[in-house]
Image (cartoon, rainbow, N blue to C red):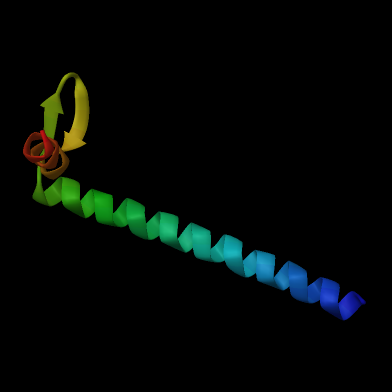
Length: 59
């Protein structure tokens, strides 16, 4: 009973750590993208130029 409960807690901790790691990786990648593509001041918002270009292409 207790062993199974500990297993469940361990799985939840692993999921949380995975989520935090993914969030950090995304933040770092976004920072790198902002370094490579300067943010476009589009309608007052700061968005990566690549995203703005994508939106123009999509339209």
